[in-house]
Image (cartoon, rainbow, N blue to C red; front, side):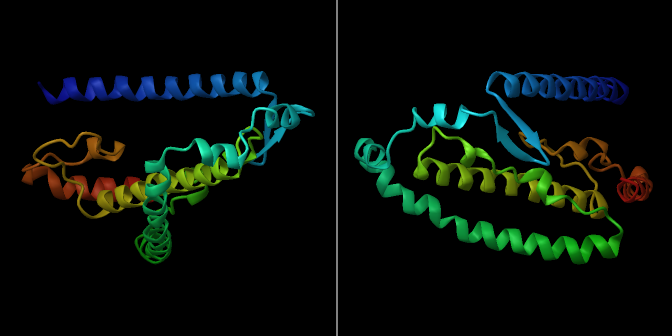
Length: 199
């Protein structure tokens, strides 16, 4: 397939992604109205009476534990043990970005854009479910945040596509130099560094 055709498809995908984001925003607006909550400065505010209504659907902790599968109870400590490497990764990426990105002139990735922890405000979840939701929100948000930091690093230092595609490459890869294209690489490196600094 000629490169111009790929560029055309990528441009179409980009336009569809923008359209999809607009649709998600509209859907979220409708869901906020349906489930009676608003966001103020990133904080969830429920309409009066909603929290009490939701609490009626909460499963008590003892009932929740009594009905839990034994395998879930036994593997929970393994799941939660991953919090230590996640915290270490979070700290390492913080220092990495604060030092290296400032030196290279790369805009910092806003951690708060990726770590969205808000499910603990739902009245229909018990304390264990809330803790689980906080943990999953933190873990997945952290990985998204780290991915963006590493993607910007890759764009700055080695913007070359791989010889084979991975299943879910980050969005910056499509602008990288083709694998083996020695004539384009240096110019592409300059362009992408300049573009990154301008973000």
